[in-house]
Every structure is written in C-alpha cells, then in structure tokens.
Length: 284
Image 1: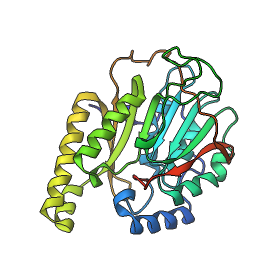
Image 2: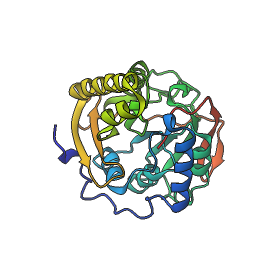
Image 3: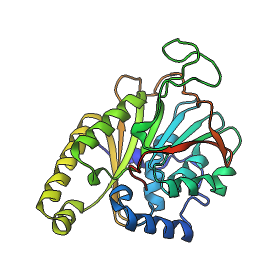
C-alpha cells in the first residue's frame, strides 16, 4: 500500500473554516471526559488528518456521489466534506451523541454550504440506521421496487474509535460498512499511534489484550481491502489514516444508482434530521 493515494487531490478546494472553534474544542473535551469510550479522543482531528480522510470524495468519478460520515463529532470533517462536494452530491451524517448532533444542527458553515449539496443528519448509531424506507421521490431503487431507496454509498468516512470497542462489535461495523458501500466504493478511517502500549499501562493486561485483538482484526481487514495509508504526525495525538475499497466494482466505481433521503425528517440548518435513537456509539 502507498501513502500517495491519501494526499489531497490537486483540484480540491483549499480549506476555509473547517478547523474546530474554541467552543467546539471545549465541547469535545467535555464529552470526552464524560464518555471517553464513545468519543475516543480529547480533541477533534487536525487539518492534515481531515484532508486525508476526505480524499475519496475529491478523487471521484464524473458524476454525483453519495457520502456517509459516521461519528461526526463537532463537524470538523463534515465541514470539509461540504467544501469538496459538488452540486448533486449527497452527504449523510450519522452522530449518536445528542450534544454533538445539536452542535451540527446549528453549524453555520453547514447551513451555508453551496446550493445543490443534499445534507441529512441522523442522530443515532450507524447500526440503527433504518434501511429500505420509502424514497420521497417514489422512484425505483436498485431492486426495482417502486417506493424503495437502496441506502448505499460511494464513500464512507468513519470517525469511530474502533480500539475502544470489543472485537465482535468492530467486526460487525466493518461488515456493515462493506454492505453499505456500493461495489468499488471507498472507506476511510483512522487510528492513533502508540495506543496498544498506552492501553496496557493505563487499563491493565485484559484491556491490552482486547485492544491487540481489535488491531489484528483491522490489519486483516486492511490487508484484504486496503489501498493505502498515511501517517499524520502533525495531529494530537499522531494518527494514521487508512483507505480501503469494497470489492465488485470497476476502479471508477461505475454508474451505480444513488440513495435518496427518506421522507419525514425535520429541517436542520438546511439539512434533514432524524430523532435520536439509542445510546451514543462513538464520535469525533
């Protein structure tokens, strides 16, 4: 695997205000101290890590795409995605933490995104996302059944702290991502460096063993589907971003149908929002 595939595309627009504000940092720290298992960090991702995570949305086919962001936190990646997406694209944001979800609903950058970018917020765990709901357009989904939308995506950007979870939960999430991706769709996620030793020292050998089991699972997943990785030293803490591709599609991801948002949401800063459902799963 190479790191070059996780460099920002040369035609990608320069960042504006995608970095977290002081208020975002304070909110993130407060939630990390309250629910570190679900938040997984003490600060939002830095600009270089954000740029690595959104690469699949910038190196794209010449057609509208659909993007799923899981664990949006205070929105540092979300804001960057709205800068690189184009009219006709769809962005579905999933955030289980209700305080982070409220912050996203009020975000002025998301509300002021360029016209033609559909934005939807689901305040729930990604495992709890409903699928095969009625499509508000009434058009046929991939299965050819009128009134059904196929909820699949060209790109998934995940901010979930996998090494905080049990191996079985991580395996379930990775399998779910593969099901949600269109053939040839791309997934990015990241992990912090040096966490295995830190986990053993801070939490004991049992948690260290669980952590190592998750890391082994992720490495096997990356060996099967990985395209590249990039180490971002200028992040707090330093992190490594991973790029993977689901099987079954041409390299340009073809011309597969795009998912449509369901009816019944409420307006949130120009987006569609769903009610909270269940306990927080994770956030950035």
